[in-house]
Image (tube, rainbow, N blue to C red; front, side, top):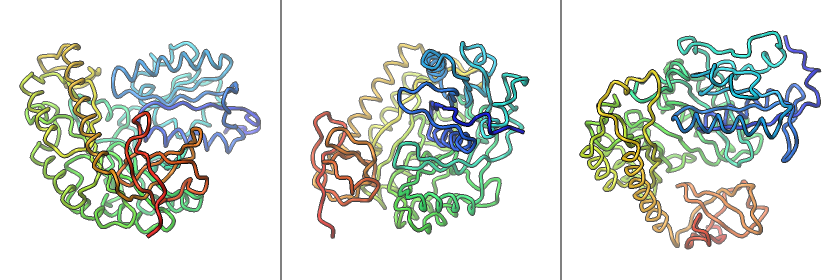
Length: 438
């Protein structure tokens, strides 16, 4: 049992790498520590405890984690450093050897961090095997943003050849619809207006409770006080016509979709052991555009996977080029220990991966500009964030167009009617003016 009194007046700093799920979980860690008298560090303030929630989706992510830990140790040389998250789960011994790390916690243990902070005689590395990750730890956060991130699911039962997530997160599991609705209602009571549903494979929601993702969406749509929901990444085989049709007529769910494609070549998809083909992916995108012509559709694409020939890449590029998606999230393939992809030949040289990535990033930039250009002159509702830069404020429309307007305090965290104009000075947002209601 932890003696809370020893933590009174202590200061903690929090650092997160990776996905929205990690951000939600870091926020929950912060809330737990705050309940024991540990205050969040202010800018420039030395911390007594540093919690670093790591990512390990690629080799680059691992490297960024190591660099961040070393930098945090230099900034807070006297702090007790806790490393947790996916990199800590997958390679805890390597993380424990990084200078400055005092405690390594796996993805199960991060939900119970206070149990370990006062155990000076215990091991500095505490993790659980993936097969033992069965409990669902709820998380919901806002951090310093207007949007809240609600964790609805964790883990993954898919075995894609390139991916370590099942080893880092365990089997698919979730909370109940009732629990998710209660958390959303709490966000509303706290003044939150927008919630992003997050998880590892959120379309798989319901596997551990006998419910469905579609049922979750319908229930959340009825929570008074929440103005807008966004759905984070959903597998193509799990985003059904029923779900698409529901979002199209929903009161609160935004026309915003992120669907991992990974490759636009069926041969490569088979090598990856993905659970769909390009024909299914095309049908999903076309159905969204049929019912919601202005919807934002993002897609993940991996370049340079083992076995991706030049012909496979060209087929993938051509497929994406003619697909009406709004933006791409492009990853270099990264060889991960223990994955089945390592058995596939041939390997794609790093310089070729770089060139393929560059081509897709250029295509993404073109698609994004076209998508935003099509919004010029339109009326929309934007939710403005707290962040202020000079006399300017920023927010997002329902279909995820970033907008900039003259600062108005009464517009923060409130759906505000705007008229969209051209690009702002640095090309990062569409300039907009406040529009009359009605």
